[in-house]
Image (cartoon, rainbow over all chains, first blue to last red):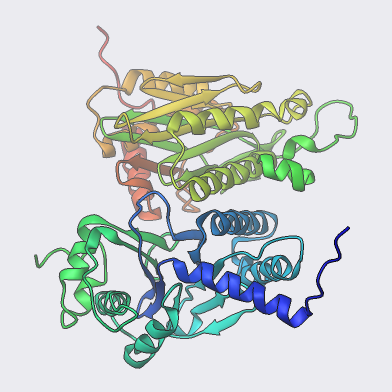
Length: 250
Length: 258
């Protein structure tokens, strides 16, 4: 007959947080930035089948760092929540705030339930508004808290360093090309401060573009379009932001 | 839909208990929908009338909806149920696309719609039938395709042109005489307006273009570039051109005899 050792609740929670943080830190980081016409998601992702970013609803996008199966689970839950809401009421009644609350509840419950291991994920839920002031970005760490972010946010392995890098350089009203360039710069900085090259085919990029005529604002940027945006120097400004009309100069 | 059936079954049309009724329930019915393919895509259009018995219930009802980027559905039959069915259908396609990260094949979409119509069979037997016409651009085969349905959910692919609803007999007759293989997008759009005009000419439940109120048929085009609904101006221009010709020849263009 074994008697379980006493572990103080503080210690138990600290251990669980430590466990989750380590799991998240193993993954590659990703960044979410506001730009003039919306919100851009940029991350390093060698796989083209397993996405880190995805569409939840018309104006809402989802980004996650950490364990794939866990955040995929949460993503599908989010899509279901949003679609059910939109079908029962109206498409306008699905908001990022509501979704972030549901995620926070789920993550919080799992984190504090002793029967389950905590999820090793960190999520970002973003909603693009009619104007830049209407944009909302929420970061959801593993323990179920919600952080309301502005401008730029980074999650994953090297998040702290990347977000301080971004905070210093990000400004409102950047063009898509500028924001993308800044994001790639931020992601290519290693923990020890050295820089490495991330080739375009290892980048996963998606935008929530408020200028899109369709209801669904989420769009992946791949292939030629991505290459064009990356090639455009920060100086080449607004001409590059519109995806349909951006090609005429080249 | 499977998820919905498990969690909130009352939201699904097929799961509602119907009170026993005598005779036919009076509810607005939508009428004629036509579709025609052309090289590079398909045109789907519908008139604007909803009838309830011999009363015109609505003059400007919209009966053609985008199902997703590459397909559209036009509905004839009980308007309320049909609109709900379309809403659920749109939701399912979008949900699948988001969860799986890929679109359903056109065939898959058509099959799904078939199941939904079948689940409405109980109501159809009480006179509340929904009979849609489904048209889309098949990205794999690179051409426009049309699927028609019956009340039991039976699905069949139609070639070149198809029609559903009360005016469909007349519309189909018109399209049979006007269709050719090498239509352009604009010619195909004109063809459907002609067909709807002929349907309205002979069927009291189908509405013709209403110049006084500026109510024109809804015309949608689906090509490689996706779904597009013709603007009010484009639809009015097409309708007026057809109308102008009909002032000279009320029965429309004459086909060669032999």
